[in-house]
Image (cartoon, rainbow, N blue to C red; front, top):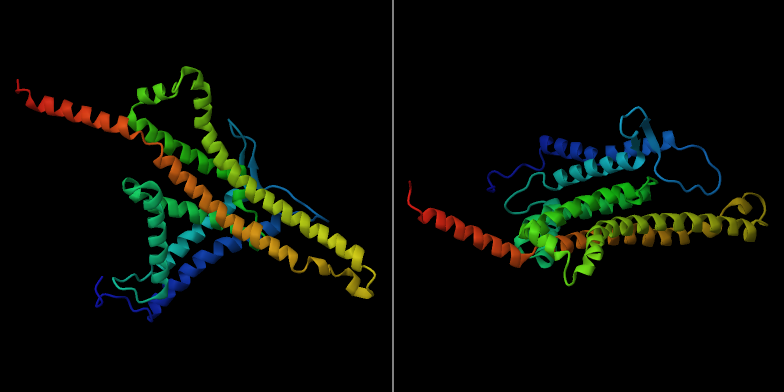
Amino acid sequence: MTEEMAPDIHSKHFKAVDRALIALMILPILACMVLKIIYTPATEGVHISGALVFYQNDAMPVMPLIISESQVNSWGVMISILGLCLYLTHGLTARAVTKRQLVAEWIVEKCQNLVNENMGDYFSAWGPFVTAIIALSAFSSLICLLGLFSPTGDVNITGGWAILVFFLIMHYKFRGGFWNYFIGLFKPIPVFAPMNLIGEFATPLSMAFRHYGNILSGAVISALMASALGGLSQTVLGWLPGVLGEIPFLRVGLPAILSIYFDVFSGCMQAFIFAMLTMLNVSGAVPWDDWNARKEKRARRKAGAAQQPAA
C-alpha cells in the first residue's frame, strides 16, 4: 500500500471501525461473565468445582449434548482474539504509522522466528498456526483473573487440542509410507513394538494432562491459600474490636502474589510449552530418509513412463 493510499486514521469512519473492533474484543468476555453470575449457585466457604453446565440434552442418540462453561468461554476467547487481530491489523500500511501496527509486526516477527528456529524452513508456513495456539492457550488461562473458569482447566479442551496435534503428527509420520511406519514400530527389536505403540498415544495424552494439570492445580492452590489465610486472619486478628475483627487482613497481598505466579506466569508458560511440544513433535515426526526415497522412486517412475513410446 502506497503512502497516497494510506487510510486516514483520524477520520470518523476509521475511528468507528476501531470502536466496533474494541467492542468485539470486550463483549464476548462480558457475556461470559454475565452467564457466570446467572448460573453460579450461592455457596459458603471454599467451593472448588469444574465448569458450569449451561445446557444439557439427554435425548441425543449417542451421548448427552452438554454446553458447558469451558466451551462457552473458549468461544468467547476465540472471538475476542479475532477482534484483537482485526484491531491490530486495521489500517495496515507499507510503512508503519501506528503503534498497533508496530505491535502486530513484532508479534509476527517473533512467532515466525520461533517457528523457523524450532521447525526449520520446511515448516515456515506454520507461523499462524503456532501463534494461534499460543494466543488461545494463554488467553484461555488468563481469563481466570476476571473470575471466569479457565478452559485450559478442563481436560476436554486440552484433550481436543492434543488430538488435533496427534493427527498432525501421524500425517507427517505417514509421509514415509504406511509400511515403513509399521515396520518402524518393531525397531530396534520386535519386542519393543507394544511400547512403541503406547508411545504414539502417550504424546497427546501427556500434552493434554500436563497443560490441564498445571492450570487446575494452580487454581486449586490459590483458592485453598486464600481460604486458609482468611481463617488464619480470623483466628489471629479476630480479637480486634468491631468491624476490624471481621476484615481478613492476612488475605491482602499474598494471594495476589500467588496469582501472579499460578495464573499469569504459569498460564503463559504452559501456552509456550504446549506450542513448543507441538512444533518439536510435528517437525520431528517426518521420516526424511523414507520420504526422500519415496519421492525419488516416484520421480523415476514418472521419468520411465515419459520415455515409453506412445501406443
